[in-house]
Picture 1 (cartoon, rainbow, N blue to C red):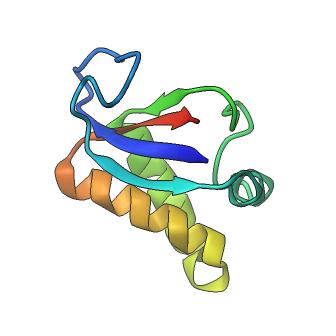
Picture 2 (picture 1 turned 120 degrees about the horizontal axis):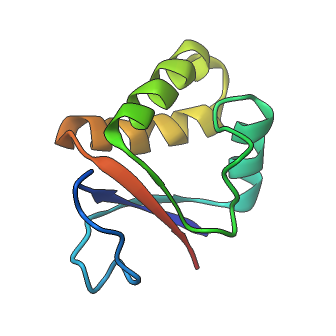
Length: 98
């Protein structure tokens, strides 16, 4: 499972989200993540098995791309729910694969 957490853009990357008191948003399984990459919603440079971070600007870009195709795909809907939490909080997202 790839777990997504809220993180302030200025905050340094913690090794463990639990130790930094990051707010858990949700998770995506590998099939959902790969479908999102195939649909061009998530850029191919992001790997399911490697931790990565999206700043608020990138969250906005991905959200715009995803919202255009949202109604036609349940995988995109799951990602949109994650992105909306970050947009509401005006923060970025950090993802950890467990």
